[in-house]
Image (cartoon, rainbow, N blue to C red; front, side, top):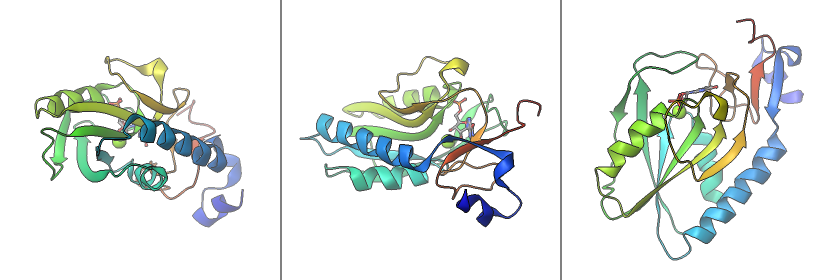
Length: 187
Ligand code: XMP
Ligand code: MG
C-alpha cells in the first residue's frame, strides 16, 4: 500500500484496511445520488460535524446535484478517548439559522449514537422543516441511544477506526481509506 509509506512510522503490516479508497468513492457517489433524488426541489442545509466529517462532506457535496448550503458545527465529548461515552457539548455552533431549513447532518461515524442523539434534540429545538442524518460509518453493534440515521455509508465492526477524516490520536486524517490497527483487540 503505497500511501501508508507516506506516513512514516505506520507501516502496512500494522494496519488493516476496513474500507478501501475505491469503495468509499463509489459509496459516496451512491449516497449523493440518493440525497439528490430526495432533495430534488429543496435547498438543504448541510451541517457537517467537525472535525471527523470534513473529508467526507467535501467529497459528498461535490457529487450532489442539488444546490445545498454548507455549514459546520464542532462537538466535543467531555470524556475524550477511543470510546466516546461521556457527555456532549457544542464547542463551536453552526452560524446558520436552522429554523425553516431542511437540515442534513453529516457525521463521520455513529458509534453509541449518544452524540447524534444529543445533536438531534438540540437541532429539533431550533425548528427546522426537517432533519435527516448521513453517516459514513456505523457501528450498529455498539449502539446505546436510539438514533435514526437515514443514510449510512458502511456498517463496520466495533473497532477503533481512522483515516478519511478520522484520527488516531490526532494523526492519519489524510489517509484515503478507513483503517484500524491490527493489534487493537489486545489494546
Ligand atoms: P457516539 O458513541 O456518540 O460517538 O456515537 C460518535 C463520535 O465518537 C467518535 N468516534 C470515533 N472516532 N474512530 C474515531 O476516530 C472511531 O472508531 C470512533 N468511534 C467513535 C467520533 O468523533 C464520533 O463523532
Ligand atoms: Mg465526529
